[in-house]
Image (cartoon, rainbow, N blue to C red; front, side, top):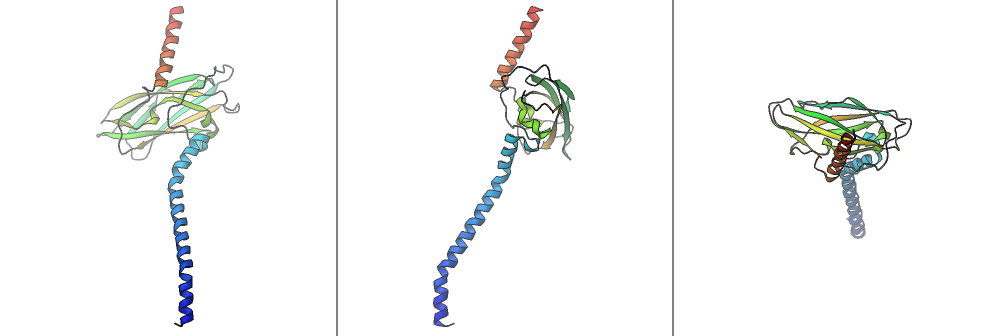
Length: 213
């Protein structure tokens, strides 16, 4: 190697190092972005209702009167993922809902296996446009559920379809799919302060109606 070639290589060494450094930084950024993309996508879906995803935490109900001139058919479908020996049963397969009104329905989990297992019910809504107008005050889907062998468990769903639901939506279908989980104690959002306040008002209204009857 000639002296001129050696000097050229020496002069180019800092440029090569800068190029390598920039490439590594770009690759690291791409890795971080790809890692964060899934949770960001989930948040985006929950906010916009894309793919029928609904909120994963309790929501306050909209302060609005029920639209008695309009009725929406709310359907509930339950299923278990492959290999999970659980059953989730909706006590009411469909209910007629007035937008703006709060509705309470019940579901029962049953562990059909001979061992303690943990599962979670993941909801989706069809049509997806309805997801942003569905508000869940109390839902078993907010946490994992743990059941012993052959054990059953009854849990509530308190929800509201807001009056802003598009007029052309006449039927809303909510699908709950059970998925196995690694761990997690049984928890149901029935002790949430917002739910307790709603329940107290609901019971008071019923008591008042009975006293006036």
